[in-house]
Image (cartoon, rainbow, N blue to C red; front, side, top):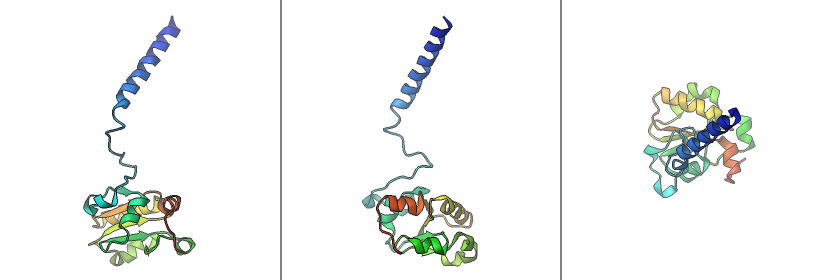
Length: 150
């Protein structure tokens, strides 16, 4: 009898999970910690999410109102970087804030998205209101098959 009760409870839990999740996936926006892919024709820089993916960066990186900031070390940059990126290593950002424009959209990248996430938060705390982290960093960029300069 106890076995039947346990089976019944597990079945109910699975049913509730299925019903609760079933209709949400198709209409829910991406989770806050997941990058959102935005089509180039639809890009309004003022509404970019906090985390953007490599494809979004690729589609806007050459615009005059966008700066892509690489916060890796010089040796990492030398191994391969996004064309046209500005290099300011993470440890130098606070001393070089004047080099980072406040009147442009700033897209921050690093190796994997960790350091750039920290720099993005730091910049926001220092008055930058249009700064975004590139999720996955240069690793995601390369995985997407996008061009790298050496």
